[in-house]
Image 1 (tube, rainbow, N blue to C red):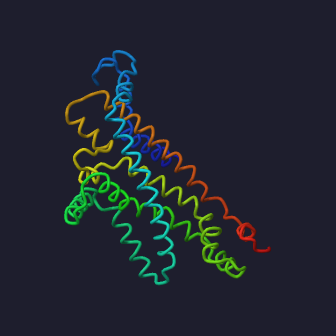
Image 2: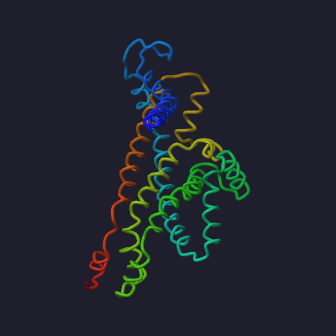
Length: 275
């Protein structure tokens, strides 16, 4: 048994080493005063100052954050409605069909999704730029948010909503004071996962980005094609650290789903219903 555990731990260490070694290598040389990724000559923050003083890059950072926040908020709102609709479907076959269609969008290659959006926007006449990027990010973020929210709905006992209705609560009160508080961890988890995917997406964004508008992922790709520059290392390091913060926030929010649901007496008290 110990040998199996030791082998499993060794395997995990090797996997993480393969995944994170290139990232750590990139981060390490972002502080290299030598200007190359071959020999570390001294510590410097020059490339980080260069990134922060680049006005065009800061505009692109703002564009990326605006797109990520707006698309995540819109996707989460749509996902709440979608998850509630899927949960209310009585037929198991119909529910499995809807879940399968939702999952197909997650496992589909980004290149196909990006090309499909490009064709769609060209046919419809949507100008490539802010609008096209926002719509595409909302579209591929919705299935992710649905998967985060739906398990919380499935774990919720239907007797809670039935009891709230019996106590005189309206549909709006049931939704806002019973259902939403219970699935709140899933909502936040879905939002943060959508935010992370939006910030990191390249393939879809590359297809739907027009002239004069760019996001960080596309900008990094464009700069990397022009040659090795340690400012790319510094920028990538900042993005990686920001993503780590988002994932950490998602982890702590996701832990809340293990807490027991609030008793019915609390929502009932909030609605003014006597216990």
